[in-house]
Length: 320
Image (cartoon, rainbow, N blue to C red; front, side, top):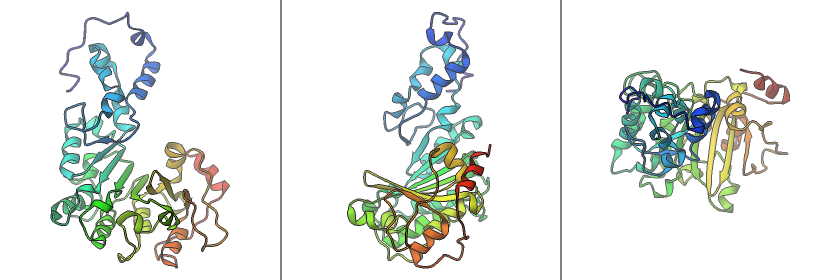
């Protein structure tokens, strides 16, 4: 409900300790209340609810305590700090369209869950490609696109963790993942999530298709270069990272300035191996040319020679 619909209260609630706090302190409290521990799953338009109880745990009920707080609370952190996860284009576009222009522009993190993909329902896959790529072949602000619905988007997450349960051929699923990345550009961070359980999977390079679609005989192995192209920073100013936890593998390309500011301020540089034949650590980072060499045995044609050292990190930290 829009704040303009509810009249401002004549009762200033001056007895409230929260109301008595300086505004900058109240803003910090609201910020903490509105930051969820995990993704907000399939939020419902014009409602504070979702499939999970995340909104309740986030403290959104704070808005219902009194009219004064309802009007004084800055809701923008609800949209800037949280990840919104959707499994269909209809649910994502409907929710984003229901937001005010101010709040839709605050959306920074969106996750697409591939669980709804199915060979018998090819329309779901086509809708995602259209929503992410659309007809003119450029990732611009055309109506009916993610770029238009969330113009402030910084991070896109593609969740293929459910690949063992997706009823599609491995090659089809792999091409869907590749094509979803084909036209996107200008992000700060892109993450592809896969399932990687057991010691055998842990030994595989984090860039291998086996983690994301269940097989490595799926054709062109260019996942990292495609991810690389979606991030707008220069080649020397971005990095490939991966993290394994609880049987889940998150592979990402991220601008180094965004990494240090918003993801991992303690990151200090790529993982070091004595030889390119050594296995990668379970959690680590590398440059583009290292990842493409590992994946294919030779550098990908789009892989820019790159290195990263302490001077580079210090220059990134000095960026605004």
